[in-house]
Image 1 (cartoon, rainbow, N blue to C red):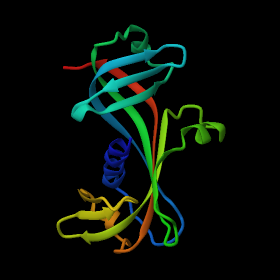
Image 2 (image 1 turned 180 degrees about the horizontal axis):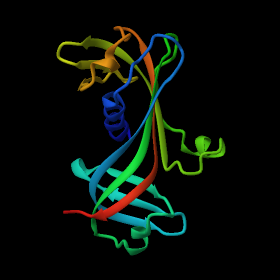
Image 3 (image 1 turned 30 degrees about the vertical axis):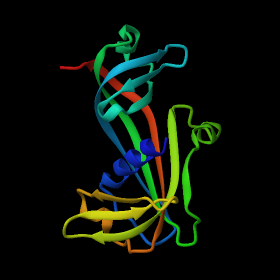
Image 4 (image 1 turned 135 degrees about the horizontal axis):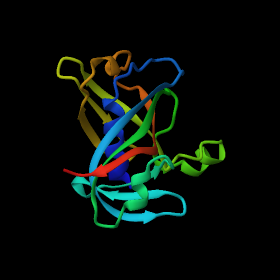
Length: 179
């Protein structure tokens, strides 16, 4: 679970966004595409579990408008476009938090399309805006270094900042056979 979140954190950090020092969260929503093998299908709730690169598993809710869902079989290689969002918020006094799943809370709050929502609080260790990298530490003091393709994300962040990262995976908007 921790490795999955660290991968998710990387995705959150590559979203083109501006992180601010204020408490106002920075929310970015985008479409993503992944090629993967269908591992499991739950037709009753329209969720497909995918097995992708790096032995990563991901569950995606498939919108009823996506007719290809009805044709899926376990083992199919597919390309899936889905919606995901990231919220990055500077929280100076926050306690470091391990990755925790907040999916059920988000569903209870009214977003039934959420398949997975993960949160953690990490500490910014250093920022290299020229090389576009960020180094951060997790609660268990694991040091992570990530390339950030958009310099805007690094604006306003400083070493020592604690940031709360929330990654939400929502719904698939298309499924096609992989090429």
